[in-house]
Length: 192
Length: 192
DNA sequence: CGATCAACTTGACAGTGTCAAGCAATCCTA
DNA sequence: TAGGATTGCTTGACACTGTCAAGTTGATCG
Image (cartoon, rainbow over all chains, first blue to last red; front, side, top):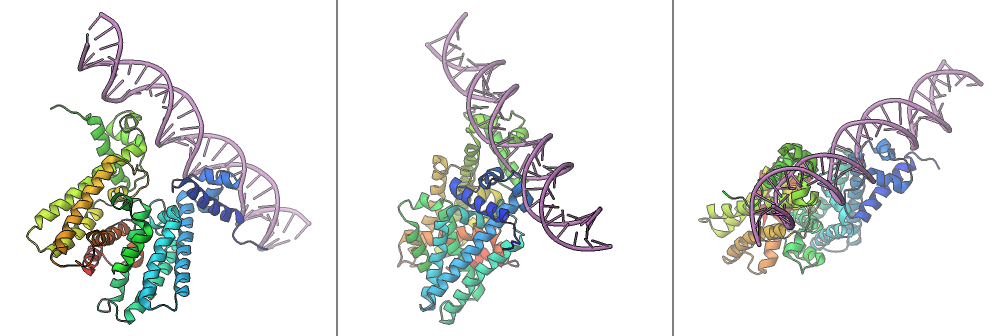
């Protein structure tokens, strides 16, 4: 039962997540998080250096979770034709955002977090790789095969991420007050 | 030379903008803004109610500026065929984001600002209207005319906005460290 | 002339992130 | 087995923050 990572750090991370969800905003205080765990006000500082350190760790964890969610979706749809699988992947991406709105915003945004952080970068690249693989599969069946893999992946990701973050930021409500995010997800992924 | 809006309020707004640009972050303090103008620490509170009030006003102003930028682009390209004009519009949108990175993020983000604000909503709808008009023009030449105007506009906007905000949030750097935003803008707008 | 109102200021307060120092337990080394 | 270093925190202090409440000062107006 040895613990390499002290469990207080893990508890703080969990508390940070809970606090973000409870407050519905990324603007949470380290002291409130510490209070939630029942440790001193400086405990977060001790483990994560500073505010940005904690939020970056949380963002990395959520990005990783997104990547795993996408991989699971891929596996579950292994039997589907490549292009349908790709559509489902886009929907899954948007679904993740809708289920964890504030956490997705935190992970997607540059604000407050350290963009150079190695864990976060790795998590992003891993997530990205899932998409690229799916696009490659689709291209091998002829879809958009006149364009480069990178360009096509960029386009797919831009569309899907754009819809997800626009919804999370409340931008779609202004122009499409009647449309649900599920409908938008399908519209957008199909349109390609 | 009568002034309906006291010039201190305008000065505060300008100072807020300057402060965001100087700090490279939306996380600016009201007191720092007041100091910049040389008024009391509570002057921003007096005119804008609270922090969110000031930032919302700034976001609305920037959104309006974006709309005007797009309209100017449309006028400048009036001679072009509709589809080229639409592409140029997308590039102009992204260009605006790159020229005022932090301000664009502020305007695009829901964070810190009051989403219900009437000025902001109006500015967003006006900006949106420019895009819809351009898409309608393109559709009237047969482009994507099998789909509804709304759906097509949604797709265009999602792609362009997605690329802009992803760049502004530093997400593209992770996957495309070598690609400039101008190249991405062209790739993305052309891909449709 | 007196009241009202707008345009601020002043003061206070609870809360914040972070620096610096402390402290107790555990581990390494000699 | 003694003693120094390291780990895992806590405690205290500080400058700074947004916001509430209560002034103040000058113009407007009946």
